[in-house]
Length: 341
Ligand SMILES: Nc1ncnc2c1ncn2[C@@H]1O[C@H](COP(=O)(O)OP(=O)(O)OP(=O)(O)O)[C@@H](O)[C@H]1O
Ligand SMILES: [Mg+2]
Image 1: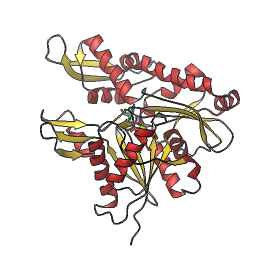
Image 2: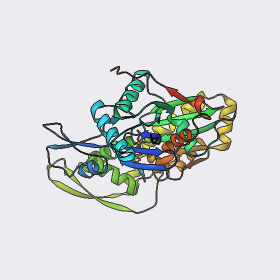
Image 3: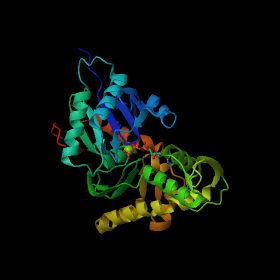
Image 4: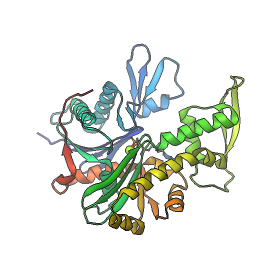
């Protein structure tokens, strides 16, 4: 019987990426499921469901099945994963693929069991878990096996995993909510307060991607933003500048920097001094916020760089583990299947 290629999966709050052994990244889609409000019938998954957000009639809901890196809706996570896995390996699973899945460091045992069960139901034979910061470090080619401190900050939409690694292990870590969604919320609050303008999450994300900056900017880039005037209730268009977006996100960026500082402070001094020398690597989509590495350097005086195509680092790390499961068995863990809600 033909062997189904094993899979590495980055199951994110906003995006799912799948790596297939021997092939590389074969799927990259938004973690969204569109359902009919009344019947709860699933209408679309991934790219197609994402296109429905904000453009859908009132009876269609576009739902992200994960929240802050953990499963929020079991059935929809299962539906989404089953759909994505069938795109990759086909609908008729003669032999089930093995899976390496990255999980945030803050995830507890019952959350791990739940996700392993969901993957089993969705068609996986055996799921091995890989700590997200280790996956990110492997994805960018960091040598975390040596007795030397290195630091990675993986910033997704819902979770930011901050970790110091050395001798093949996580030495110190924090899993916080200061990711892309946190920046989007800050922009929503700012525009409501300053311009009485109510905007949706999708618009806030567009503003962040187009104008966002973690450092004060002299750029005069602007954007016309349409939302609802909170005073009149009518549609309103407002011109927003990148300096305003900096003002909107600066406290959120400060929260992130404080969390990074906290992890460094708890790190043994010898390893911390390695980090001051070698710097911090940022991965995850939210690391693309303009000026973020500069803001971290400005506050902590530690060199900081963003990975190439940072959204792919974690899944590439899962893929690397998959390509040589024996070499990485010390960082892969199994979790018992079984739902513990
Ligand atoms: N150019 C950009 N500037 C700022 N933020 C960006 C940019 N591109 C993507 N992002 C943000 O990156 C986030 C998505 O990143 P990613 O796909 O790594 O998250 P995820 O892995 O799904 O989430 P998590 O790891 O938290 O579960 C979103 O918040 C998105 O707005
Ligand atoms: Mg992620």
